[in-house]
Image 1: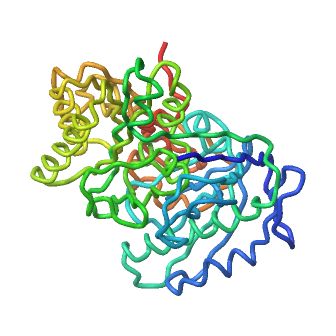
Image 2: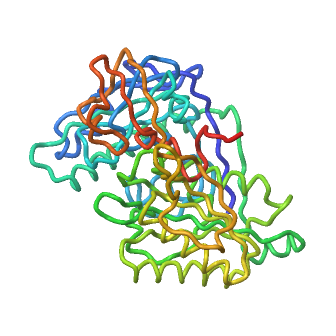
Image 3: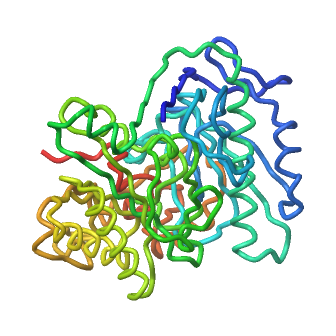
Length: 426
């Protein structure tokens, strides 16, 4: 599959009477977007705001972040099975509004929702302090259940991002990136002397507002399967979960998965990016056994030399991570796992809930229990009402002046287990 991503650089967002892109500025007619959102009768009201890099702005509670994209030609369209009809994506030409993001907020759905600071120390922990953000603030109808509300705002956020993405369809990109993914047999013929490397991506699917959708299907209903990495770039995988903000894969993370980017960068040079496997994370032991068995079976069937495994979430999914790692290692395939740590505020506790000697190559995205103080900020988009209830907050987190002391697990993307963050070690 061959996918061309045409990047249209967005350096600012402004409200206007006409929605358009002009001179690198995304102009937005909020009334038009409001009509799209309020098509869903479960949403009673919606507001729009803009947050730019460096502004004294705090956004919370954050539910999802989405990059506006739209198909120009070839293949299925963006967010298949949810916003557009079910058709295979991952080929043709897609235009990307690079530098822009849609951020959804509103009354809390689950306690694991996040904070984005556009300036100060908090901004250093989230990639979304560097994007120009159109923030969509939803109000649900009364007596709406958490699951109904989550679905309503998830779909509405995607519709907003899709509407904005379509503004770039007729624009000439500032930069074009080409990703080509060969079949397994073709790849072996092209690169017979390079190691065959695969990517096993674990998707949060524990239910109770911990869900990920693939072509519109809840991943917990699926067995471990294969996907082209270009399909992921084209919106095949969508976030629908309220896992801790620090290591949640938002939809934006899926669209810009850095593991996929790095494997493509080395494809044909130091390795043959031979396969991408997606698997779920489960609650019950029998389901964990089934999914990890299938992961190892596919890796063995594909005769891979090495595999990168990325996790989403922590605690219970640590078991899925180690089971995948151990079973794949026992096929004779070397693994590297990407995770984060919950090692206590002093960093002295056991980092993962599970471990095994075969898990001997690990990349960490940081300790989510690390405590920082987010300073007073001039403007809040959303509400601070849930600051002490979200994961990472605690009684006394919110000070009278608006400063917040929290574990970094409350910050959206802080310890993302795809490595999509600004953390490093020296």
